Amino acid sequence: MTKQTSNRTALVTGATRGIGRGVALSLAAKGYDVAFCYRRDENLANQLASDISQYGVNALPIQADVAEYQDIESMFNQINYRFGHLDVLVNNAGITRDGLLATMSDDDLWAVIRTNLIGTMMCSREAVKMMMTQRHGCIINISSISATKPNKGQSNYAATKGGVESFTRALAVEVARKNIRVNCIAPGVIQTEMVGELLADSGDLIRKKLLAKRLGNPEDISKAVLYLADPENDFLTGEILSVNGGMMLL
Image 1 (cartoon, one colour):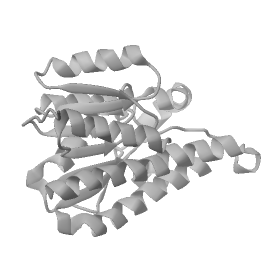
Image 2 (cartoon, rainbow, N blue to C red):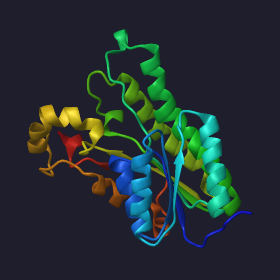
Image 3 (cartoon, one colour):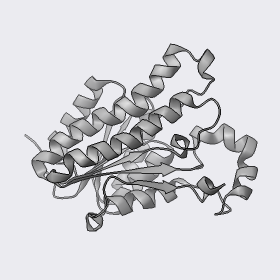
Image 4 (cartoon, one colour):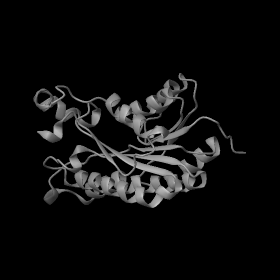
């Protein structure tokens, strides 16, 4: 029997660390029941579930790889069974496999494409199926400043993030008549494990150059997610929201 809940429900992919963790906790603080997926670390997933529950809402940790359709299908079946609806999808899961294209392995090329772009598209497809039945919903994709301002060795990563931004606009056109909004956030340099090596080498230099005079943190992205997820902001769809401390102007 499906256990329906009256709370708003959100799914955050790739949520046990960094931006995803911050987003999941911010949504919980706003009263959302939060489903989230993780690939491997069950301890981190259990800790996040416990932290979410502290806000008096439900947490649903799901082990799933967004590069695998069977995992995605199972994940959405579990969400439908547990909550009966989905109000917000945050496509956050992403990986890097940096390297020069001429020497990049097929595995590194395709791993990034499958996770960052195809995974976003497949999760969105399953979410849209639920949201069309409800006749409302909000999808928020996480891109990157690298889509428009890439660094050397990021051809695979930058291409996927550019694809995510184009996909955001195209899907927004498709689903608008069903009262579903689709937007994208393009973070700049955010202090997470994913960019730890970059920050160790160049963090001070980047900080001094930014107009904001500080590096970004997951809370900066969480605030943007809450803004886009708010039903009161129903005039926003098909947009790319850059959150980069002025980095695009450098």
